[in-house]
Image (tube, rainbow, N blue to C red; front, side):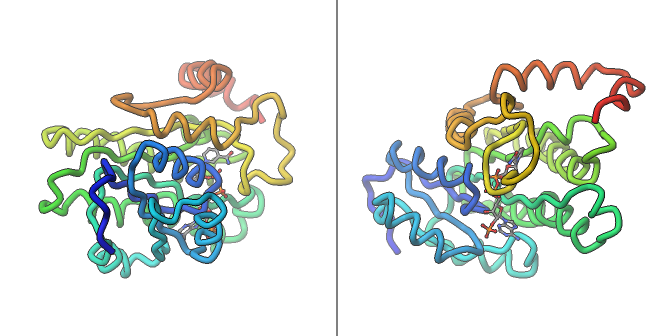
Length: 245
Ligand SMILES: NC(=O)c1ccc[n+]([C@@H]2O[C@H](COP(=O)([O-])OP(=O)(O)OC[C@H]3O[C@@H](n4cnc5c(N)ncnc54)[C@H](OP(=O)(O)O)[C@@H]3O)[C@@H](O)[C@H]2O)c1
């Protein structure tokens, strides 16, 4: 598939069936960017593309974040090398369940950390792609401090955040920006049915706007309430963190 010249840039969205990713795809398309939407759920994405009249701007490709051995050939098969990469794949297993369900626990590690590292390393080490300019990762407030209610999910996000921080330094001389989006609660498939504080919920489109306008910001915490929570969490002594749920 040849990308028509009218597109300004190409964006590779990994985990593109995420509710946040789909909002970001619509916004990138509006900016006249061509999107490679990479997901396991290609049927759903084709439907999304059709429903939103995005046929020209979006190419759907199969991608499984935890099928590590496929990542090199997946990247090689892309019709065009990306300017921008968004890693949005995510998997949540309840902390209590994950303590005794190794498969669920391991899956969080694989989706948030191993899969991200595997594919992003391949992308940044492609020396032929001299227009790579930005890598954005969807991380989480859960990764800021270890807390008893969600430290398994949280520690995988923390690892992802630290990877992106180091990666930013590693690629800085190539003028590639690396943004970490540290999100609070998002109203998406992932949180459906969970008893979360309603006043803290953010919409996928709100997070997507932060993603698309990430610019040079190293760390972004969308939403004023979550910014305050983020800064408090950062400085809170552990005996107070332990009092949190
Ligand atoms: N929801 C929240 O409150 C929240 C808060 C902070 C950070 N985040 C993070 O934000 C990101 C987007 O999440 P979301 O809220 O938009 O939730 P979502 O709609 O549930 O999206 C998560 C997506 O990850 C995809 N995924 C899972 N395993 C995958 C794999 N092996 N390969 C490829 N894709 C895979 C899923 O694909 P399928 O559709 O194929 O199952 C799903 O579409 C995630 O990284 C999440 O951890 C979410």
